[in-house]
Length: 287
Image (cartoon, rainbow, N blue to C red; front, side, top):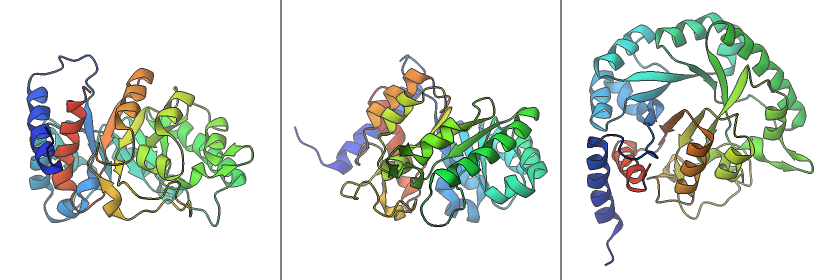
């Protein structure tokens, strides 16, 4: 029997939420979290109501990127009211470089374990020399955070995977960082955008990815991104399982290597509708 995509999503959501309700019967089931940046437009209007909606999706684990209309302590209170927590938080390069005290203060106020950088400022092609400079900073910042009981990770955005004759700049970032102080958050959309195979990347560096961002890319988007600029229209974010990325393969490898946190990130305007469908898809394939 053939069914349309809308009907399939409706059916999958039902299946997914039934599985959520029966608990962790499958040994393969993962704790599906959410990068709260996905709902940035709604948070800008009403934080408590938006968190109420997230709670209805069965999400407990969250990651923060920007704290809307409240400080870290207030956000932590709102999360705890809903049996939710923030295991990770993102900050910009300048925050790490010039305001580490506030980075640590906010991360601790939210009881986060992971503190993540999502972009390396650069001009032109991101090359080996820039990667080595960034890696030195990662080690420095990571040591400071480790001394405070926190963990530094870097979230790559695609430009790091441009191929050179002897590898990629991402390979340099891995090779030049000390895993005691600096590791990585794999955004499977951006790795794929840069021409990498996300599952193969997890297998290549099995001890370096404590976190992943789960998002899928619309079919037909050219890969790799010929500009290697870490930029795609937000409309290219689609429901997990509806796009180009092998979500099942990624989750299987991530589970195999022991990824600790799985955050759905959906930057599209349809995120509030798509996120519960993505959760249902993950449950429908046994994770």
